[in-house]
Image (cartoon, rainbow over all chains, first blue to last red; front, side, top):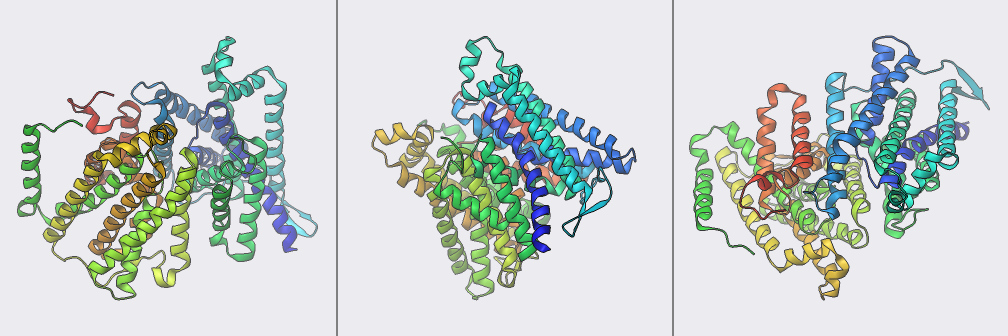
Length: 291
Length: 306
């Protein structure tokens, strides 16, 4: 019984972690940016979905759409207002650009967190489930919403795979991650590609944020934790490696679920953090990373 | 190395004398705010030695600060060590932590090290909560002894500690160690080719940074009378240290002190707007980072051009 419960819950959580971390790794792979406001963007989506859907009462679907839209706008502001100005700034030396982007997006995440807690509430909220009801799987009562969440997340990841591997623009993204200079020489506008990848990122973070909010709840206090787990998963899997990210998401998701069920919910994050430290010491490039 | 003009030295001396005489005119509240700001200044200056000079992304300054604070607090509260000895214990614990952080720093760079340092803070925080029996857990650990109950005396202690630490850190940054760190931070291979042992210097930098972070954390505990996660370990404290150092101007050491005082005083002035004060402070720091990457000191004329 407990084993099946852990299996099901762990699967749903891991899938959402994978979806959330995928956008993070995509941005890094294509444009070399580590966005430490990631958790902030996910929570924006969840809190707007909650506010529009539950507080105003327009229903879960309108709420989810609103959350997604606002998250997309916030992602574009992150790119246009913070990342791009720093990358184009002549006052920032090239070798320090990465550190500046890290610090600036970290600050942006703090601002998002504070703004959300001021505008709405600083206590945790729960986004209304998109589908109500429960179903019994092998004797374990499981909310249909949980199955729906995992299905949506996998559908989105499938769509992303098709986009990257089967479309023209996707191939350009791939090319930009391998050799941006050659792409420029072939006459493609890098700025457009970066803008496009940030749009995809905004959508991914938004979907992951709304779904996570309807499963585990959300709130301004979740911002650092979500950024941390995305960062952990991506580094564990190998920066820029999509399959590594997926594997790492399931490892972290299941370790956390196991700890929460078998040891104590308050220690949830600890084993994954220790694993991360060990992996980084032994194999800095991550499980499937290339360096 | 540029020599500092005489007029500036005179101005600095006058400024320091005014600072030292502050308790004569100011009330306890203002002194309290500045005392905290001075300890914070040491956090930021220690961080600048690692980030500004060695180019190490340390997102976990509070790991070192927390080790110093809890090392000192626990040896005072549990073992009954007198304050000076407890501070020494705290500093030793922090330096050990600094060297432990330096080991991954030798192999990792940029985001990887950033993550490890971030994780170190999270693990320390969890450890404090798990071993609540001896650490006081989430409530905090009260220490029986304090530095002084007089706000004027506390202020003078903090001021003296900040000035001495700042001077030592500044001299280190201008010494061959600072130069070599800078060189290794920009191009490790080139620095090694010139015959410098980057490894040894990096460990040294971590140890020095940890020493001052730990000392400041320990003194802060005996000023506040309590060691708590929210005061010395939380990630948000670490973010503030980083903001202060970058805001003041990185790679200057003194910038960290200016940024800290600015940050803490601004936070107090913004107190009436309540919750939004953190937002405004983060916004100011973000604008400075994006538009003026050299920080407040970079706005002064007369600095070397970027």
